[in-house]
Length: 340
Ligand code: SF4
Image 1 (cartoon, rainbow, N blue to C red):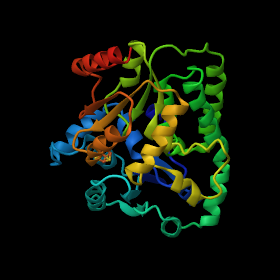
Image 2: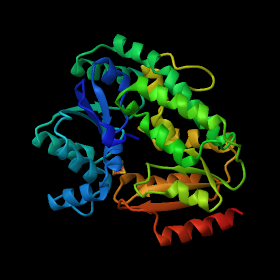
Image 3: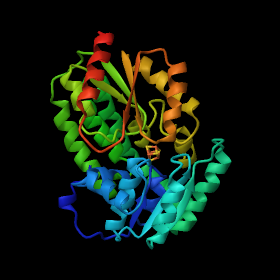
């Protein structure tokens, strides 16, 4: 994640993104992508941002991620252009985009087609490229340039589930950071190389129950670390792994359309389920934790996950930016006891 104390004046225009978009297009257009989720949660006072949004009038009964992103954007007018994903991410994004337009930002929309049609996705990619002032050919070149860091992240993921040399928490942070490559893919790749060399020297760790963490990134802090202290290992971070677009083992994607059709998060739950079922087998998982965010429509998908996945599953709900609380600890302990 970005260390905000190290930030310097941007040399390229900043492009805020409300979730993972085809970042190759933003980079081809000369923007520095800024994942607003990562900036909000990486802010020194994320809870203060949520409180500020509520003071401004956003309801208590609204997802805290949306409130945090909104308040962060108000404090950062240098992020003058924002791409919101209006199909395939969050039902609250439409109203968020309206509020950011009122706040003077240039707001663009991108859609992942609900039917997962390649032709529609190609059309939406071309529309985004045109709106940002670039071409799909230029974005395809960036896609090829991003393969080395994406392969590095695939290696990092393997060091989590094969050897345990990278912890579940580290895995989560690196994978979610790939949504915008922290604004600079070259520097990101260099840092990743250093990290991989260091992690490769660590001893293997393959004991304890092996867990998969499903669902949107937890807003509570310390979940991975708490599980680790209890002797378990998170060896599958479902959605962060999707954000990182790891090249498949059978070979690289042939195009942006192929890559963003393979991405499961923005389409229906059945593609997510197929991916989860594959990873459960591959990573030999013992149990699943489904994290859901209070007031998020995706909470309803808990039913689908429970009806299709046969592994023991604990559903955890988080609302505020805060460390793992006592009640959650007790639930985690009880769940791990069941697994053992
Ligand atoms: S957690 Fe759900 S409601 Fe909140 S921003 Fe993400 S998709 Fe939207």
